Image (cartoon, rainbow, N blue to C red; front, top):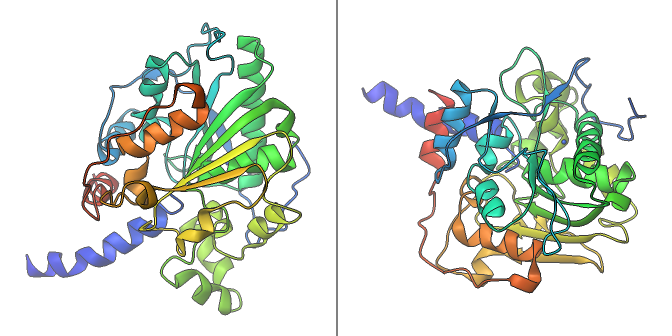
Length: 332
């Protein structure tokens, strides 16, 4: 029993790093990691239940790999005058559309949006998505957006990206010509400038060959999200934003994966950066809880439809909320 308790912090650290931060064409990035020769994506089709806890959604999808969040991927949905743009949801690392959006998707659908979500960047040898080269994942997002536009007849879409999904979708917008097809981009817990992962990232980068050695374990996408990675450096070169798209980040100053938390902010004339604790100081939701925190989710909906914005209810959320369930799901 005591041995098990002593080993738990180590397992938690590994899980947090693996879940870190929180995405045919010519590959634009000079990545520190080599991409997998195969990266697959899919459109999930089997509706799963609404979830209110991130870890429970993660546990469910591990047993139901084709689960899609309620309200998403109805290709018969037609945008309305009130909500003329479909919303495309882009998930995070080692995750899926269902595990990250089983709360937001039904919320958006209930508000009258057409909602769509893909699973991207999976090594066929793995069961979770969001692990492969983000440049390739960006192309997969581009393909899916075109499918959504064709099915709905919409000229443009709005995009919500959580964790890695924020960076992959921004790569699509900024570097793959996606700006002409996107009106609003919202990044939750966005690794815009990467994370130091409690100092582990810089330590690995300081040792010649260490990053390449760790890549098979951490996955290419995790390595690309390290602060100072060549992927992020190239993506942000010339400016974080491009003309014609409104960018909003929703972040937490107690994010477990992205430190310093200021690395989540974008810089540009069309960028708005919202920090949860600036708006609700008693809400200590961090990286993993953010995608299931009602206050944060209302900020996302408000950014997509500012004319109908609602003031979220500020309630106390203890520090560390959501982490035990995520860790438990990873070991289920």
